[in-house]
Amino acid sequence: VLGSDAISEALDRAAKGRLLAGHRINVTKTAINGALRSCHLLYISDVGAAQGARLAGALRDLPVLTIVDAETAASVDGVVRVSLENGRMRFDLDHGLAKRERLQLSSKLLSLASHIKDAPAGGPR
Image 1 (tube, helix red, strand yellow):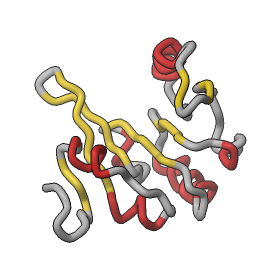
Image 2: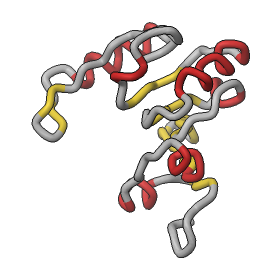
Image 3: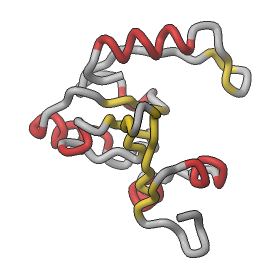
């Protein structure tokens, strides 16, 4: 997690004791100059434009799934953009950015997205 302490703590509580493909899920607070190379998923919140530009450079050519909240999306591009809509969490996907970052998004994830930017031909919405 880069940014909000509250989000970092909430994600840490949610992941505690959980496994993904037999591996423990670790939630770690990081900085832009932190250990991004070992990161598989990066949740970005409360990051301004200057930090966003530095972050884009640090993540270039790294296959990291980036998730940004609606407020941060103005400063930082993310593969996933989460927002609250009528009290429900929704997410949009940037499929073009995912492809550039060498990430393959599952068809199930694509089908759950509210909107998909650069959707593949014949793909959902």
